Image (cartoon, rainbow over all chains, first blue to last red; front, side, top):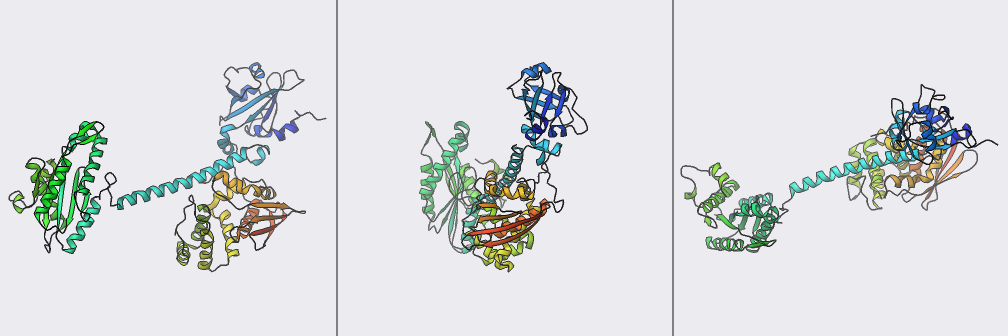
Length: 343
Length: 195
């Protein structure tokens, strides 16, 4: 009867096995392990000169190795690829110290297949190496497809946000939406008013109580403004703490004055946040455009800005209506530094 | 149906006939989308709609179209990954044929929600095989036949293939392996990953 340790049997079942004699010299190498040393016949060489034992660190001699049964060996080939291998040692019964070491690529399988140009025939039929290679390749392809999908979705999200009309923090309309509404009103030639509202002391809330408090204040303010205006009015957050209300078909300055007063009154109610009170107020500048008056969006917004600036200068919590005298004398436009400095 | 399937049909039309042909097909049918994402799922009834639209736009009958898609899937440079993944199935063509029983499981291993129709290989004598397949979309057997023809070539085997349908959602591909090593075939390098 042929012994199970016959090379012919093991070459098929374990193509990465080696047999060593008592002195630690390789007496046989399975076909795949031989392939790792293409131009070098390792049979006859000392095992420890062909492989380095990385772990367990206590294995430094062939005597140590012979004692390392039922231990997972971590080895490295002493060739240019320095391939990491897993191994297991079993003594051959009824011999004076001969052993078998079976090797496997473990995690280095991917590079090894490339480095040594391995084929299906280099693995035992029961080895999962081929399935592992299949899985790595299939998963990489699937992952790449998913990555591309994510990139496209990210692009679509950015595009959608750019086209959005809503300010995500407050739920109010944003500047894009406000431009849109204002443009339509100007083209239609109907009467309307634009209110620029700038919060007073908001920076102090942010600085002393933090951004979470600031965000909360902005949300409360937004709600108040929506409540104090009509459904047909457009309330937009156009900057950090700047708001614009577009009010179509307003009959008198008196109505606007009352709306402004109500908004300031509402915003001056202290806003509780985490046991603290946030106190703010608002300055308002308003411009009214009568029916049939031809104006540009730029002029209307600029005039609302000039009126707002006048309110800020007059002390806080004021509401100013635009009139031509408010323009700085001799200058048609508000100086840029004045805009930048106001708060 | 998995987006990979719909997307493959779209890629087949675009790579073989140009984007305009795909747009013409989309315009002909009332499709819910004009572009299919490989990694999303779509309603099952969309796939036959796409195939009908493509068939009408290209003026090709379903069986011929499906066989051509099968050929495309394993031979076009853009789908090299599919050919490679199939080649992992076996060392020669007969071995590969036997691996087809596992094809749906292998596909799920790669993409867990990709459900391919069940297929079963029957081996007769003298190198004759029958591949029985469920066919939720008419012509799936034709698609397999197109793919198998290319794979036989890939392995260097000479094989005769024929297709039959029972008309009730089961199709059969008959395979006669005339010469397992007829040519050298194409090299399959385990370590040469695509992409």
